[in-house]
Image (tube, rainbow, N blue to C red; front, side, top):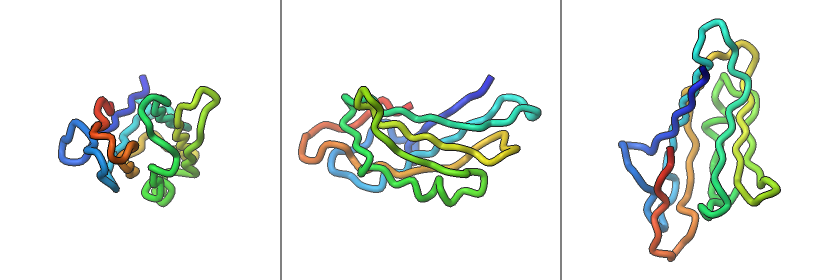
Length: 113
């Protein structure tokens, strides 16, 4: 079975208010060396306050296994990162950065899994 794991740097459990360039690692595997991993999708619910401009996908787009990585707004307001992988890829080990979504809110973003 395919697996995807998101994690904050240094084992952090939340993104602190007003922080920038928070690295989020993304690891995905097809679960079987004979299976190809074609697409990985990460969704931030609309209620999280994350906006497309809060994301920096340059580490993903420069990864040799990645054909493209795009952040967009879904019809329900969710922010969706769609990572399309090159042919023959069975796993992904990369990252992207996220700025704290709501400045001066005194709220930290947690529950990133």
